[in-house]
Amino acid sequence: MVHRTKYWQQSKNQNGYRIPKYQDNDCGSNLTIRESRDSLGSSASEVEYREDIEEENKQHRRSFFQLAGHKECFRVGFRENTILKKSTGNEEICLLRLQSDQALSRFVPKIFGKIKQDEEYFLEMQDLLAGFRDASVMDIKIGYRTYCEEELYKALDEPQLRPDMYKKMIEIDATEPNEEERKVCAVTKPRYMIWRETVSSTASLGFRIEAMRLKDGMVHKDFKTTKEEEEISRALIRFTSTQLTRLRYLDRLYDLKEALLRSSFFRTHELIGSSLLFVHDEDKAGVWLIDFAKTRILPQGIQIDHRTKWELGNHEDGYLAGIDNLIRIFTSIIERVKD
Image 1: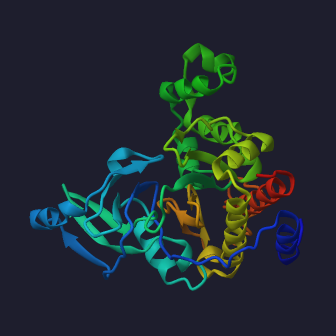
Image 2: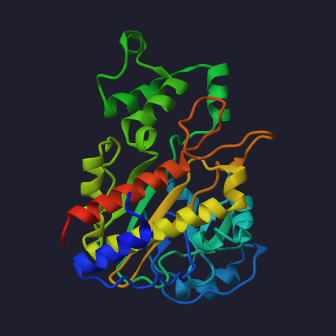
């Protein structure tokens, strides 16, 4: 791979672009994004939902769209430029730890508090689109797997035939079930979980495209079987549309990789089911880490390099492998595609 500094010099000379120094707007969000552009400011706190808060903020509400995830998990925030996300798993504790991580704090959404509403707790966090106009948005799931080892161990200890997962399997590939599975019209959860990661580029490249929303408002989610690099490249070319946007994303990915290698949080955790959220408009582009419900501290005595292929028991997540492959593919696109 071309050295980063040398690559930028080549890009400027060959393509005529002067690469601007990226200005971090230090904002982040999740897959639900509210379109708003005002500044944020508040300290983290836990508050009860009150009707007067609702009334006071009605004038600030704007529509938001959701690329993926369960719809009931997201609501509009009570502060300007925030969203509410249902508090699940390790999301809150991971976000708080990441906000204190000197290397990665600028790559994750800020959390402003926890709100109780309808007997459920929601995290109020920054809205990613603050500062973007007519943004294009893409969610990429990072890592070799999207399930925790504990999930697989439990499923192996208590195997049950799942007709619902058999149905999902044949919707993607009708030829995949074996003869026995066809007889009972069901598969076990471990069988489905492991197979699912091989259908897309997750198991091979350490990432997969989940969904994207283009500038014109069109949302694309047909990436369940997008696996080959050429397919992925075509999707990324369509999403970015200009060489300057690709260069901005590549710069951000390099910065993120360097931050991950310096991060104490990253060294001590396995990140499962986490995503990178790509957002750009005509003036800027950014990449943020989101979704930490399944992220957890590594067991005592276990160390991972985030690149080694996963085997049951080694806790490898493939996070850096996914970043490396994204950098490589973006670099290839920039070198061979012209606007």
